[in-house]
Image (cartoon, rainbow, N blue to C red; front, side, top):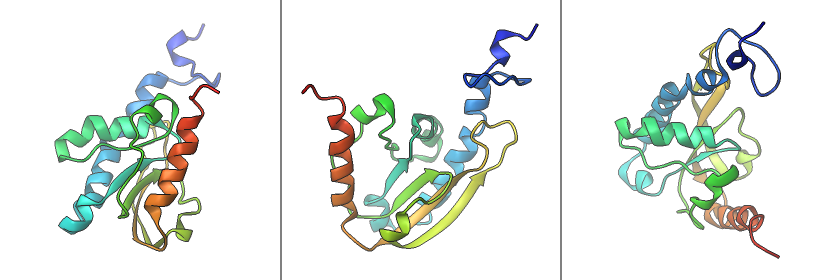
Amino acid sequence: MVHPLLEWDNGTRHGFSQAWADMTGWKELAGYVAQAYYSLPEEEKRNCTIYGERNYGYAGAVYFYGKEYDLPEAITFHESYVFWAPDTIPNGPIIYIYRDINDLEKFFGNISLVGSVDNAFFREKGLKVFLCREPLSDVAAVYRELSLKEKSKYWRQ
């Protein structure tokens, strides 16, 4: 019989719990975010947004381990974290946490990979941190529109 804590929510079985695997790479993730953040000049730091795409665990990792680095809190629209996301952000650089850059090259002229969390025990193995600079459009307006869309899912009709 397999111990119930070794079965993950997707039905797969592992030699360690999903709760442990979900958090194993968090400190490394926060370190990459700090590396990106502290590479910025002061003006860009003041206008920098840390954004975790589609996973509140990314924002949680930055919140928990980011205190060691004096990082601003991360934003995500995933599940209940949407309620803490600001309605607007400054039109500055974004530290983007996800597996790939999606369509961000349409919005930024300079995107660099800062690091990838490659811990074999991390459930999100391969998670990347990108530093997106030189906005090509009004990133704040794009964010504001996305924020409104995501938050409206919870409004009563």
